[in-house]
Structures are given as structure tokens and as C-alpha cells.
Length: 523
Image 1 (cartoon, rainbow, N blue to C red):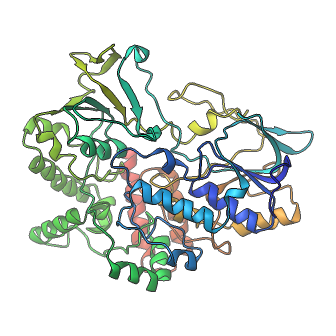
Image 2: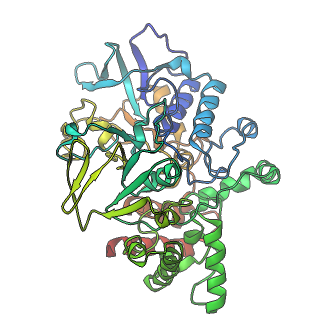
Image 3: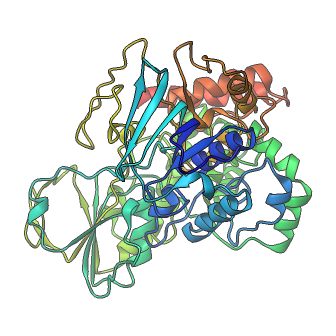
């Protein structure tokens, strides 16, 4: 059923036009329900609309950064690179929206300011910043767990006379870094991508680091014709591997222990995986690096040597070596990040030693120095998980300033809004595409068809998480969990133990997941 844009009452309201929001809109509208969707951006794309800083790309592989439910559509798409750049990801989402005619359901450039459940009518009432209103029985959120930018509340921010840009809200017209003094605050995925991408343009680059990350190379290269043809020929097999893998990659367990090979063989395998880049060190070297602390220590020793080889100044190299196990935090891949610290115009400031105290009119002051900058790049990440919700008026959460602790205040009888994951977020079960294919959409659609007042989370709940449903819509996927957070690990363990098709791999993957959980607890 096509929603009349002049009507105000619908079966479902969807917020967001990223991977989750678009798929929710597609799945529900094709099931015959009237759907109204809202998106703050001027078009589809979600976080990939805003994350357009220099060097922005996914560190997920091209095979998995797309939907698998429609083979015909998948066969007509090809990424240029094994780790797609932001423009191509955005192009993919636009192509997806056009192919399935999803824009007709959306109001773009529209922010939902309020979502309130009306006990008298048993409906959700929505108010937007344009004055548009809508009412729906069901509320599906595709807000993104990592979509609301986190702006540090550093004193003196308003006093700085230079330009400040956040990686997740990059100006569409771009930023001119030519011969500028530039600060990059943050060394997560965005920071280690943007810094080497702009270093050739700037006169000076200062990186403010709180926590160093293990930073392998990307192994980036174009997708070959043979690889694309192989993906199409083995499409089902590739996605079977994705759903079996604990992190949603098209790989299988190696069957190797780090202690079962000679030192020379271990070094050879490490070198090979380091050269392949990305997550190969975690999942293609040895199975026990995420199970055994002793095995992980050996991996960290190797990775530490790689940092010392890349960075000539021993003191700087030691500051760039993390003290946490490899894989306990997502290792952001980057090319040239470590090497750029060999340049005379690049410096590293460890804010654990000399914290940032305030902005000045001309730059930034730490506890020991003052620095002058023309441009400050905030690669400070996101107000993760609940940030997008707390910026919308909903009684479940206390409104607060971004970056501050959130207090959850949901009365027991209040329907709970769901949340959907986005690509690159690692407390779930892999990329958004594999997450979206991990649970039964058909259950929700049947309930909608029957007009049932119950959904998946209880008798009073009429708000559905978009990442709970599968494009296949028929059976739960058998994906596991990414390393990082206990929630996903528990879920992955249950799925692997209960429904793993390749049962010979289940015990090994279970041990791997338990090992990650143990490493996380040790931090």
C-alpha cells in the first residue's frame, strides 16, 4: 500500500534513511502496510550522507556491505574497491532506494522532534520541525546507534576564531586545508582515516590522542573482475559464511592454534595477514588470539614491532602502542597513519599526559602548551546508542546535553522504541546488512496483518527495532557476534550453539567468543 503524503494516519512510521531505515520501509511497504518515513538529510544515505570527510571509507569488505535478499539487484551492483569509499556507499543506497521506489514514502530535510505514545488512542503521535504531524500504530526507528555527533564540552569553544568541523557532519562543499595549521582531535576510525588523507595539504598537523589504537594497514585495492564474477557465482556460499562467522565476515575459522606452529611459521602467517590488512590479523591468522591471553600477547608483540618499524622516533612509537589486547577494541585500519608521524610538520599530543584545558581565540591550550590552529577537526565520534533518541522528545529518556550520562526512565507500561544498528558498529553482529538479515521480519508482518496489539517485545509494545528483522523474512540467520561488547557475544554464543549449520565449527567459535568475553572483562 502506498502512503498518501497528504494523510496523517499510517500503519507504521519509520525514522531514518540509512541501511536500517530503508530496509524497514521496503519490507513493510511491500507487505502492504501504509508507511510514512522521515529523514533529517536531504536524501537517502543515513550516516553515509554526513560522513564525507576526506578518506572516509568502510573497513568492511565489499561483499558484505550490501543486501543479499535480492540476487537480481545484487548482480547489478559492483563496488570499485574492496573497502568502498563513502561516495560509493552513498551511491549504493541511492540506487537501492530508486530500484525499490522508496523515496515516495519519505519526507526529507525533516527532523522528528517528538514521538509520544497516546494511551487514549493506542497510537504514536509524531511532530516534526517542519510542523508536519503523523500518527501510527507502529514505530520503527532507523536512527543509527552511531549517528549523533559527540561534541566535547571544552571551555572556550565559542572563543575560537578559526574553523571547526566534525567528521560526522562534514560540510558538503568540503574544507580547504591548503597551507593551514590543523588539529585533529581523536584517533578512532575517523581520526586515523582523515589525518593521513589531509597531511599532504596542510602546513602543520597536530594529532591529539587520548587512547592509541592498534592500527593495521587496510590492504586496500580495487575489486578485480575475477573477484566480482566469483562473488556472483558463489553468492549463497559467501553469505552462508557471513552468517556463520562471529563477526559477519565471509571467512571460515582457520583451525590453527598459535602454539601449534613454529616461530618462523607464526611470523610468516602474521606477516601475510598484516599485509592483507583490515581484520585479517584477528580472524585469518590463528583462532586462539581471541581466546587465549597468551596468544593475544604474542599478537600484540608482533603488532607493537610493526609500530616501531613504521615510526622512527622511539618515544612517539611507544605513545602509539596500545596497552589493551588486540581486538578488545575495534582496530581501525588506515594506510599512512603511523608513517605520517615521521614528517617534520606532524606532531602527536598525548592528552592523558597533557590534557586539553580550553580553546583560545587562536587555538587550543593544554596543561603544558598552547597551540595555534586555523582549523580544528573533531574526530570525536558519536553520542553512541542513545544519543539520537535523547535529541528527540520521548518520555523514555531524560533529555540531556550530548556527551553526558543518560538516565533511562521508562515506566514499565510505556512502549519501548527500538534501535537499529549501522555499518561499522561493533557491539552487534557484524555489518548492518548481516545484522538486518538476522531475525524474522515475517513475524512482525504477520502481526501487522492480523492487527495484533502485540509485537516482539511484550503486550504494550508497538515500537519495533529495525535491526531485528531478516530480508529473507523466513528464518533466523545464523550469524554470530563481533568482538567488543558482552551483549553481542551472548547472542552470538546462543546462535552458534543452537543453530549453527556447520556444527563442526560451533565449538571452536564458541571458545573464540568466550575468549573475547574474557579479554573484555580483563580490561
